[in-house]
Amino acid sequence: MNSPDISHLQQANILSDEDLMLRYCDGDFGAFKELYQRHSKPLYRFIAWRSPRTEWVDEVMQDSWTALHNARAQYHPSASFKTYLYQIAKNRLIDLMRQHQLVLASDLVHDEAGDSAFVAYVDSTQTEPEYLQATTNDAKAQNPEAQMMSKQQAQALHQAIDQLPSVQKEALVLQQFNDLSLEEIAQISAVPVETIKSRLRYAMQKLRQHFANPEPRVEELT
Image (cartoon, rainbow, N blue to C red; front, top):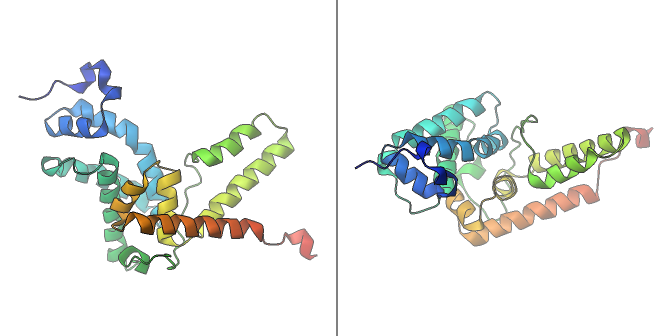
Protein backbone atom coordinates (compact mmCIF):
# COMPACT_ATOMS: atom_id res chain seq x y z
CA MET A 1 0.00 0.00 0.00
CA ASN A 2 1.33 3.41 -0.92
CA SER A 3 2.02 5.91 1.82
CA PRO A 4 -0.40 8.87 2.01
CA ASP A 5 0.59 11.92 -0.03
CA ILE A 6 2.96 13.94 2.10
CA SER A 7 1.42 17.17 0.77
CA HIS A 8 -1.57 16.43 3.02
CA LEU A 9 0.53 15.82 6.13
CA GLN A 10 1.45 18.76 8.34
CA GLN A 11 4.39 16.84 9.78
CA ALA A 12 6.24 16.89 6.43
CA ASN A 13 8.82 19.33 7.74
CA ILE A 14 9.74 17.09 10.67
CA LEU A 15 10.31 13.93 8.63
CA SER A 16 13.93 13.08 7.93
CA ASP A 17 15.31 13.24 4.42
CA GLU A 18 15.63 9.47 4.42
CA ASP A 19 11.98 9.00 5.42
CA LEU A 20 10.89 11.39 2.71
CA MET A 21 12.96 9.54 0.11
CA LEU A 22 11.41 6.23 1.17
CA ARG A 23 7.96 7.77 0.82
CA TYR A 24 8.92 9.04 -2.62
CA CYS A 25 10.10 5.54 -3.56
CA ASP A 26 6.64 4.41 -2.48
CA GLY A 27 4.96 6.79 -4.91
CA ASP A 28 4.50 9.94 -2.81
CA PHE A 29 5.37 12.83 -5.11
CA GLY A 30 4.70 15.32 -2.32
CA ALA A 31 7.71 13.84 -0.52
CA PHE A 32 9.87 14.61 -3.54
CA LYS A 33 8.68 18.22 -3.55
CA GLU A 34 9.70 18.54 0.10
CA LEU A 35 13.15 17.08 -0.64
CA TYR A 36 13.58 19.45 -3.58
CA GLN A 37 12.61 22.42 -1.44
CA ARG A 38 15.14 21.44 1.22
CA HIS A 39 18.10 20.68 -1.01
CA SER A 40 17.79 22.44 -4.37
CA LYS A 41 19.59 25.66 -3.37
CA PRO A 42 22.46 24.02 -1.42
CA LEU A 43 22.96 21.51 -4.23
CA TYR A 44 23.04 24.31 -6.81
CA ARG A 45 25.72 26.13 -4.79
CA PHE A 46 27.81 22.96 -4.57
CA ILE A 47 27.60 22.36 -8.33
CA ALA A 48 28.41 26.03 -9.06
CA TRP A 49 31.54 25.83 -6.92
CA ARG A 50 32.68 22.62 -8.60
CA SER A 51 31.79 23.24 -12.24
CA PRO A 52 34.57 24.64 -14.45
CA ARG A 53 31.96 25.95 -16.90
CA THR A 54 28.97 28.09 -16.01
CA GLU A 55 26.77 26.58 -18.68
CA TRP A 56 27.05 23.16 -17.04
CA VAL A 57 25.54 24.15 -13.71
CA ASP A 58 21.88 24.02 -14.72
CA GLU A 59 22.47 20.87 -16.75
CA VAL A 60 24.11 19.02 -13.87
CA MET A 61 21.43 20.26 -11.51
CA GLN A 62 18.63 18.91 -13.70
CA ASP A 63 20.45 15.66 -14.44
CA SER A 64 21.06 15.06 -10.73
CA TRP A 65 17.37 15.25 -9.82
CA THR A 66 16.47 13.16 -12.87
CA ALA A 67 19.01 10.52 -11.86
CA LEU A 68 17.61 10.54 -8.34
CA HIS A 69 14.14 9.88 -9.76
CA ASN A 70 15.36 7.11 -12.06
CA ALA A 71 17.30 5.38 -9.28
CA ARG A 72 14.59 5.61 -6.61
CA ALA A 73 13.73 1.91 -6.88
CA GLN A 74 17.31 1.02 -5.89
CA TYR A 75 17.50 3.50 -3.01
CA HIS A 76 18.51 2.14 0.40
CA PRO A 77 19.13 4.51 3.32
CA SER A 78 22.59 3.12 4.10
CA ALA A 79 24.00 6.64 4.04
CA SER A 80 22.45 10.05 4.55
CA PHE A 81 20.24 11.36 1.75
CA LYS A 82 22.51 14.39 1.34
CA THR A 83 25.49 12.12 0.73
CA TYR A 84 23.50 10.15 -1.82
CA LEU A 85 22.32 13.26 -3.69
CA TYR A 86 25.66 15.06 -3.70
CA GLN A 87 27.44 11.94 -4.95
CA ILE A 88 25.03 11.78 -7.88
CA ALA A 89 25.80 15.41 -8.75
CA LYS A 90 29.54 14.95 -8.40
CA ASN A 91 29.53 11.84 -10.61
CA ARG A 92 27.51 13.63 -13.29
CA LEU A 93 29.93 16.56 -13.28
CA ILE A 94 32.93 14.22 -13.58
CA ASP A 95 31.20 12.49 -16.52
CA LEU A 96 30.88 15.85 -18.27
CA MET A 97 34.50 16.66 -17.59
CA ARG A 98 35.59 13.32 -19.02
CA GLN A 99 33.53 13.92 -22.15
CA HIS A 100 35.22 17.29 -22.63
CA GLN A 101 38.66 16.03 -21.58
CA LEU A 102 38.64 18.23 -18.50
CA VAL A 103 39.11 15.46 -15.95
CA LEU A 104 41.40 16.60 -13.17
CA ALA A 105 43.90 14.46 -11.36
CA SER A 106 42.33 15.55 -8.07
CA ASP A 107 38.98 14.11 -9.18
CA LEU A 108 40.50 10.70 -9.87
CA VAL A 109 43.43 10.41 -7.43
CA HIS A 110 42.98 11.44 -3.82
CA ASP A 111 46.15 12.51 -2.07
CA GLU A 112 46.28 13.71 1.50
CA ALA A 113 47.04 17.34 0.78
CA GLY A 114 45.11 17.56 -2.48
CA ASP A 115 47.80 19.58 -4.19
CA SER A 116 46.37 19.23 -7.72
CA ALA A 117 45.35 22.71 -8.87
CA PHE A 118 41.77 23.41 -9.93
CA VAL A 119 40.20 26.82 -10.29
CA ALA A 120 36.43 26.29 -10.44
CA TYR A 121 33.90 28.89 -11.42
CA VAL A 122 32.10 30.60 -8.55
CA ASP A 123 28.63 31.91 -9.36
CA SER A 124 28.57 35.30 -7.70
CA THR A 125 24.77 35.39 -7.82
CA GLN A 126 24.43 32.47 -5.43
CA THR A 127 23.60 32.85 -1.75
CA GLU A 128 26.66 33.30 0.40
CA PRO A 129 27.51 30.81 3.17
CA GLU A 130 26.81 31.62 6.80
CA TYR A 131 30.29 32.86 7.57
CA LEU A 132 30.04 35.34 4.68
CA GLN A 133 26.47 36.33 5.47
CA ALA A 134 27.63 37.67 8.82
CA THR A 135 29.86 40.13 6.98
CA THR A 136 27.22 41.31 4.53
CA ASN A 137 24.41 41.39 7.09
CA ASP A 138 26.46 43.60 9.40
CA ALA A 139 27.16 45.90 6.49
CA LYS A 140 23.48 46.72 6.09
CA ALA A 141 23.60 48.75 9.29
CA GLN A 142 26.82 50.53 8.26
CA ASN A 143 27.50 53.59 6.18
CA PRO A 144 28.16 53.23 2.42
CA GLU A 145 31.94 53.21 2.86
CA ALA A 146 31.76 50.42 5.44
CA GLN A 147 29.34 48.50 3.25
CA MET A 148 31.76 48.68 0.35
CA MET A 149 34.60 47.47 2.56
CA SER A 150 32.52 44.53 3.80
CA LYS A 151 31.57 43.60 0.24
CA GLN A 152 35.22 43.70 -0.83
CA GLN A 153 36.18 41.47 2.09
CA ALA A 154 33.51 38.95 1.14
CA GLN A 155 34.66 38.98 -2.49
CA ALA A 156 38.25 38.50 -1.40
CA LEU A 157 37.26 35.45 0.64
CA HIS A 158 35.38 34.00 -2.33
CA GLN A 159 38.43 34.47 -4.53
CA ALA A 160 40.74 32.91 -1.95
CA ILE A 161 38.53 29.83 -1.65
CA ASP A 162 38.32 29.66 -5.43
CA GLN A 163 42.11 29.32 -5.63
CA LEU A 164 42.27 26.29 -3.33
CA PRO A 165 43.10 22.88 -4.82
CA SER A 166 40.01 20.99 -5.93
CA VAL A 167 39.74 18.41 -3.17
CA GLN A 168 40.44 20.95 -0.43
CA LYS A 169 37.86 23.33 -1.83
CA GLU A 170 35.30 20.56 -2.12
CA ALA A 171 35.74 19.59 1.54
CA LEU A 172 35.55 23.21 2.67
CA VAL A 173 32.48 24.01 0.57
CA LEU A 174 30.63 20.88 1.70
CA GLN A 175 31.35 21.68 5.34
CA GLN A 176 30.79 25.45 5.34
CA PHE A 177 28.27 25.98 2.52
CA ASN A 178 26.26 22.77 2.77
CA ASP A 179 26.55 21.85 6.44
CA LEU A 180 27.69 18.28 5.83
CA SER A 181 29.42 16.29 8.54
CA LEU A 182 32.96 14.97 8.21
CA GLU A 183 31.55 11.49 7.74
CA GLU A 184 29.22 12.61 4.94
CA ILE A 185 32.02 14.49 3.18
CA ALA A 186 34.23 11.40 3.45
CA GLN A 187 31.54 9.25 1.85
CA ILE A 188 31.07 11.68 -1.04
CA SER A 189 34.82 11.95 -1.59
CA ALA A 190 35.42 8.20 -1.09
CA VAL A 191 38.28 8.79 1.34
CA PRO A 192 38.74 8.26 5.10
CA VAL A 193 37.53 10.87 7.57
CA GLU A 194 41.13 11.59 8.57
CA THR A 195 41.89 12.57 4.98
CA ILE A 196 38.97 15.02 5.03
CA LYS A 197 40.32 16.49 8.27
CA SER A 198 43.70 16.94 6.61
CA ARG A 199 42.18 18.61 3.57
CA LEU A 200 40.23 21.02 5.75
CA ARG A 201 43.34 21.76 7.79
CA TYR A 202 45.41 22.46 4.66
CA ALA A 203 42.60 24.60 3.24
CA MET A 204 42.39 26.74 6.38
CA GLN A 205 46.17 27.08 6.49
CA LYS A 206 46.24 28.32 2.91
CA LEU A 207 43.42 30.77 3.56
CA ARG A 208 45.25 32.14 6.60
CA GLN A 209 48.46 32.45 4.59
CA HIS A 210 46.58 34.18 1.80
CA PHE A 211 45.20 36.88 4.08
CA ALA A 212 48.39 37.16 6.11
CA ASN A 213 50.28 38.04 2.92
CA PRO A 214 47.84 40.05 0.80
CA GLU A 215 48.86 41.20 -2.66
CA PRO A 216 49.91 44.87 -2.72
CA ARG A 217 47.34 47.32 -3.94
CA VAL A 218 47.95 49.31 -7.12
CA GLU A 219 48.35 52.60 -5.27
CA GLU A 220 51.08 51.02 -3.12
CA LEU A 221 53.12 50.23 -6.23
CA THR A 222 53.00 53.73 -7.70
